[in-house]
Image 1 (cartoon, one colour):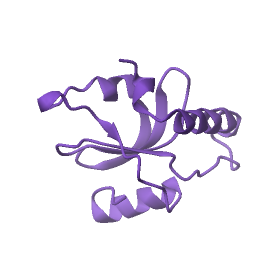
Image 2 (cartoon, helix red, strand yellow):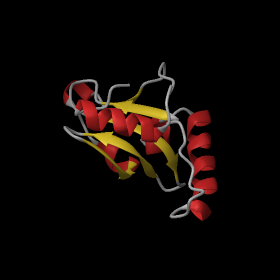
Image 3 (tube, helix red, strand yellow):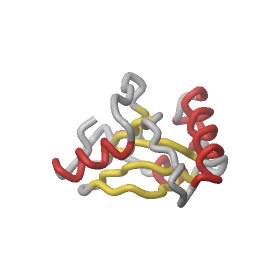
Length: 117
């Protein structure tokens, strides 16, 4: 199964749009602070990701928490390749909607020691 099968098509489209808009702005004062588009989670334990952008190859940017929160790039192919007990996988929280920008979630996560979303 492809990594793209794990994210709703409309969310994947928005992640790619954000990626394309952000690339010429990276490292400038005009870089955008998007609201996360997607929340991924481990249904059995530690592992939460709030993603704002993604390229066509599955390189995504966002806030991840595997025991401590950090901003950076992740491979969606690697995330969705994780095999959990009982045949479970990392999942998209299809009922979640961002209420803050990524930098606000990151500041809250640094303060709390974990993503609270």
